[in-house]
Image (cartoon, rainbow, N blue to C red; front, side, top):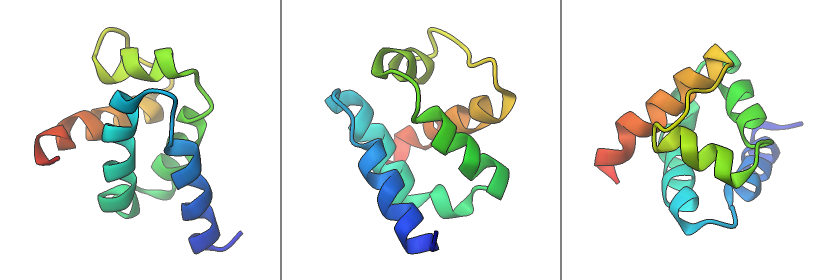
Length: 84
């Protein structure tokens, strides 16, 4: 899959049923996804397989992902929240 197609697919998968998630995921994907390592990019894609409530709890720091790479990505999304 080309990088453009992969990015488009991740964009649509980042659109969630919760506006609160979209307001964090879409800008992160747009502005910061390209700075992630390949392993972190794969972790972001795996993260999107989770339910909205799980993502919301991680991004609100109510729970911590068991997958360390997903935790790194979540930490980066949280750290970039001030820029939004």
